[in-house]
Image (cartoon, rainbow, N blue to C red):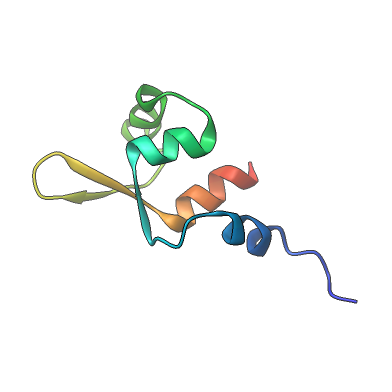
Length: 68
């Protein structure tokens, strides 16, 4: 019998993307966009900045947050 792997379970529930928009992360976590932006600014959440103001949240960060 295989052991339960919470990361694999969460990974299977997420859309097949390497990064997510702030709005997508907010929807996945059930929080406001403002809370996602605050988490990034405070260093609680890593992000990738794509030219200008566009931010993307790496998949591994979303999984980390969902695992609590």
